[in-house]
Image (cartoon, rainbow, N blue to C red; front, side, top):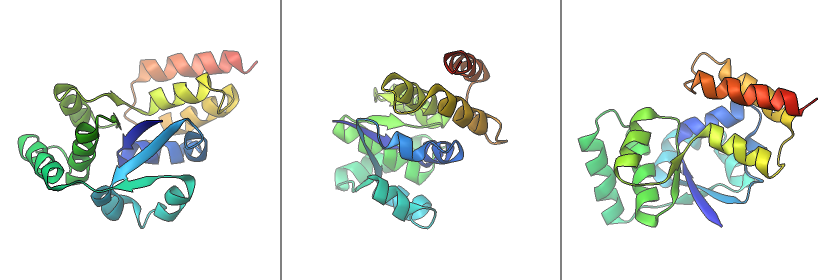
Length: 166
């Protein structure tokens, strides 16, 4: 089973679109580094995420050193994000992020990287969610003031899922 290391922004967007539970029905194992879970998720729905199947992973000392190097070289990264990248890189797993700086560094490090739109596409491909559900979810995500998803990609999917729902 493919393992996906998520940052917090992806999980927040999925929750915003009421697609979090649907996401965990996909044929992937979702993981986060322990530091990210403790700092950003534990007191904000962490128990529910664990119930859904989220796995918490620790970095060994080499992984921690790698995460700290990422953080030092890319000051825009948060420490939890640098831990997520290090976890994905050390295990050759795929990183899920909505953060531009993190995505850029993942590409430099040759770490497979996707975001929320890719996950929604996966949900559609395996029929984990209907076109109506995906349209409503993406609409909710995209109208939030903190949405950073590319507008053209949002419009393309909303149009496709509107069409497929009729």
